[in-house]
Amino acid sequence: MDGDETVVADLVTTACSGDRRAVARLLTLVERGGEPADAVAEATHPLAAGAQVVGITGAPGSGKSTLTDGLAASLAEAGRRPAVLAVDPSSPLTGGAILGDRVRMEAAATAGAFIRSMATRGHAGGLALAVPGMVRVLDACGFDPVLVETVGVGQVEVDVVSVADTAVVVVTAGWGDAVQANKAGLLEVADLFVVNKADRPGAHEARRDLELMLDLSEVTGQAVDRPAVMLTTATEGTGIDDLWSAIQAHHGRLVTEGRLVGRRTRRHRAEVRSRLEHLLTEAVEDRIADLPALPDGVPGTVARRLAAELLGE
Image (tube, rainbow, N blue to C red; front, side, top):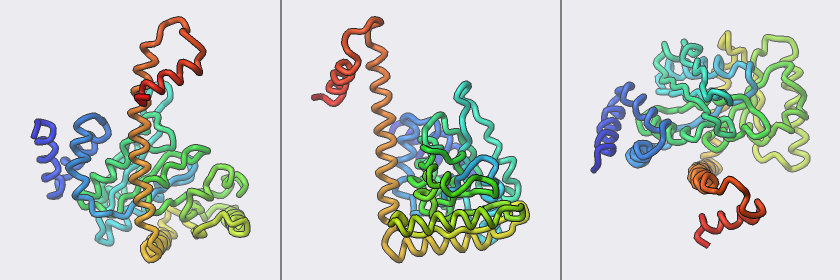
């Protein structure tokens, strides 16, 4: 066993005994990538017990962090061991991120929930490449459920479904009509909708719009499992318990109907695909860097030649 594997094995043993500092160090290794991250994956994969994973996403300003804070705090106070992965957007210019969720989630931290912020590092879909590995670490260390809070939803930012058993989409009054929700892919992403800040005018109208669009999706045959639409006011803790009950009900249906295994199989395949794409992108970048300064052929022809070389054809 080489040095990296020895260090990782010791860290995993310490983390599984309840040492949160060791958990944090393992997460850092996963986030940095490379051989140490691979060693963490090898060590934690056999220990992962299938923790429930809940994805929480939605537009900026919808109150995702406050809702996640309240949910994690409630779970911790009820005797569960929740962990939160809060994924912040990286700056396209500097690559930096604010990573302020540990400050905003004071109630959850006080109640004993484990909270970790990380940056997307430019990864499309609102989730960092390392998120599945970090979820696995938290699972192996006994945290359950794991709440993954992602950056705002957009046309391509729907990767939350690839890591979550249940995907919760948070909206607010005045967020836009149901047609916009359909265009953004929210109906395909959501297992549950939450209209947060329900104490504000327009909340019930937003719920009505979502219900109408869900009705339409059922008529057209698009809906597989109709999402519930919940009302919450996270700043006051209103609706948090009902939200968790709805999450549990959805998870129970997945188990009863045999669909949870299918979701987790797709999660595994999505992680393999994501890592394969990453490796191929690195190989492509290396080949492109070796191209001459002046064009040596039609771009399409050059691309096909490089693809054939990479694929060994």
